[in-house]
Image (tube, rainbow, N blue to C red; front, top):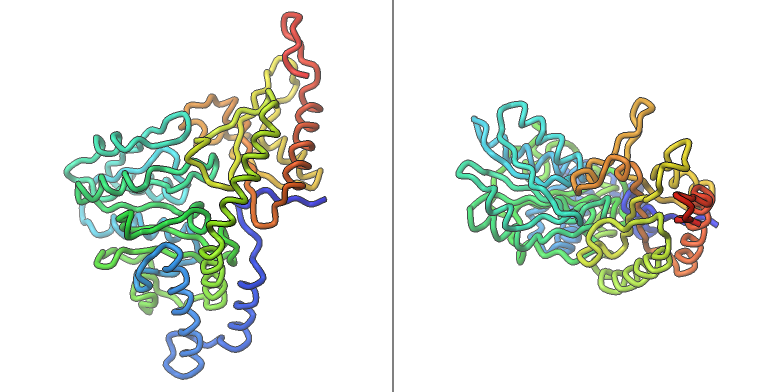
Amino acid sequence: MQIYLDHSATTPTRSEAIAAMHRVLASEWGNPSSIHQWGERASTSIEQARFQVAALINANPDAISFTSGGTEANNQAIMGVANLYTTPQHLIISSVEHSSISAPVQWLETRGWQVTRLACDRSGSIKPEDLATAIRPNTVLVSIVYAQSEVGTVQPIAELAAICRQYQVYFHTDAVQAAGRISIDVQKLGIDLLSISSHKLYGPQGTGALYIRPGLEIIPLLAGGGQEMGWRSGTQAVPQIAGFGVAAELASEELASENLRLIGLRDRLFELLADCPTLMPTGDLIHRLPHHLSFCLQIPSADRQEPITGKTIVRQLNLAGIGISSGAACASGKLTPSPILLAMGYSKVDAVGGIRLTLGKSTTAADIDWSAMVLKQILDRLTPQLVISGTKIIS
């Protein structure tokens, strides 16, 4: 049995998106900047996709700029605003951002920019009042992740965006994990900039989009031919964009029913694993992505010769044909604790024991039951009869 429970890492490209890509590769392969019929066919495919992606977040199609993915969209948002200024200003991010936000911000910091990193609570949530307190006269941008990929927490975006409007500060959100999974309306929320990735919603890898509120001016990352209304130079990846558009349209159509189904399966898996003393749920259990479960391993070290980490569980489940992920990173043979879990207040020992299980369109109730059983068996095997002071605490 093969069970894929890593849909927050990437989703399989759906057949309808693949069909759209094949169509473009076969008959709409022209350069979309060319004014002859071959170019016009390619350009039409892009504009259709622009409408489809815009509809997913209730945006004006002209506000959608296609990129190579979520990372480029995030960098474009951060640097596009920062490059408006000739002298360093102040910006605010959260302590639980993806590295495609935290890395460019760290680079700006080395160039003299002032940066406030808002602390989160134990669930990974940012308090709106903390944002209001952190804004300064020279604050020019706030970027808060919509939904945290590692622990599934959904932030109070409407309240955060409202504070930024009150202080006339640009607000960006990395919605890579949220778009196509929960309902988003950029106009009601009052968002200035929002990042999306195709391969998180069953579209192809290699494309994404940045929503740029109409009337907002930013500096493009790339100089060249001025494609994408001047926001993103370079010949567009027409097949990927076409597939992205189809995936976005279908995600929008299926959102309500699929969310209910995934929430049911997610909660079922939480319940099946609730009696595991070695698993501690992480993230906000209420304000949470519908397909997302995450845990920290709570395994006493007294009975272990080698630490049991999240990556240990990933490898063991992979041998059983089940794919999940871990938040800790391995560099030069050393395991680095998850910076997200550290920011949430977990210890370094706990922060190397994080695991994430994320469900998708193909996930069934049978998959949930089997995965819970296998995970329990692995944990039992890795944590045999541990006795401390004569009292058995783990069976």
